[in-house]
Image 1 (tube, one colour):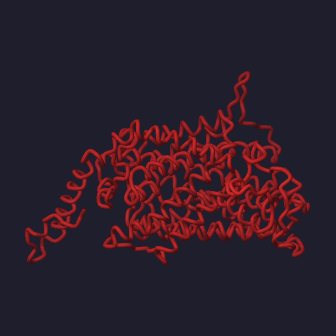
Image 2: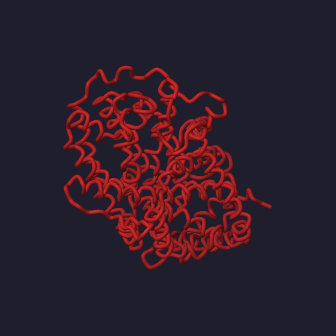
Image 3: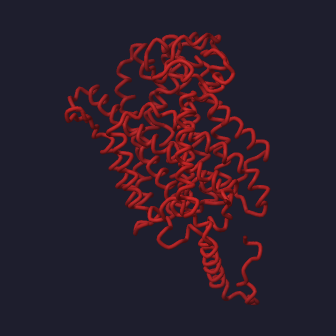
Length: 530
């Protein structure tokens, strides 16, 4: 079996012109930057930092955010280099298919489906929770939860998922404009809250900056205690669970990494971007910088307003908790509104990303080809609707909050393989034009891969068990269906590439028809093309 067979870059790009399976390019670099901010800045900006400070790193959570931001930023640079070579839907899945091989691409695609499905469901579920909380704070007696005997359903996820699904069906650009407007408003609220918070900051709260390590006497996260809630590396080395200290700073970085997920989703929109070789690296870079700055500012304010010990005394600490502890209860309403707005924008980008990953895998034949059919608006309308229905139903009917850690491990595994793929592609295809290059190849990509793997090892044992179960299910699907239906094994991609080459040569001939001396040799296929 040829499970490590690879697609060429030319075959990958040729697929984007297949009739009935092509996406419309209409996004600019600012659309991508806003999309990155939209998916990375949600409720997490108000809660994840406070939880990491309270239960892991203390004031040094600021360092945790910087570590996570640097690791994620370096991984994003790897994505940017690949996007400048192959501006194609599918993100890490597509990049891995062209470098490491089909089986690894399948694993990453399968992981991304899990990541974005769970993230979309969790975020839309929490959108309903925070919407109801905001209504309560505003004095409105209104609730989106309905009960029919023992069966409970929340209408809020259905409403928000349905709204953005409709926008995305009619065009990615329309959805990006609405999402962009909401994101700009969200950024304004975050900056307002940060500025106000600085007036309550006390320097004494930053001491000690790195609290001394101490035994973890209880588990703050997860429904299971004991070894299942330990970081995997502590379990493997038989270490006793601890909090704070420098190990707490690192485990805090693994936790707050959740705050930076989403930039792999931005890369899935490469195929819908104008001048992608310039705009994709620029948009991803600008968006990443904005997110790092915002998260660090919020972390500085949260840990400066109150002691990390005060935050640890609360079951679910957040930035709102810090304002309440200093007597500024009015801030809770503003923060609540910002969370509702923030989570809405995250839902849209996750719906887009999940659909584009499934679209790319379907176009390659690893999933049924009918899923990658595009409509008159240049979007996979049927697939977008199906994805929206699945996400809405999972969010509305199931308690899926316990699976939120799966989002982290799916993202980190994708980041690791993309980083490893950079030196492989440099060696295999040094001839390819690259408008963006990550510096320090191969050592920087290898360090990035190692850093992502280390963060994965800081996730809990229970998360790893769930991850392995999902992988086993993926292998069953691959060997039962995907391997035998992959277009790469049927010769269809070669035929698609020949058609694409012919169209490109005819186009070139038309553009140069008035150029003297153009010979028939100009129409000859490039022997080095493949």
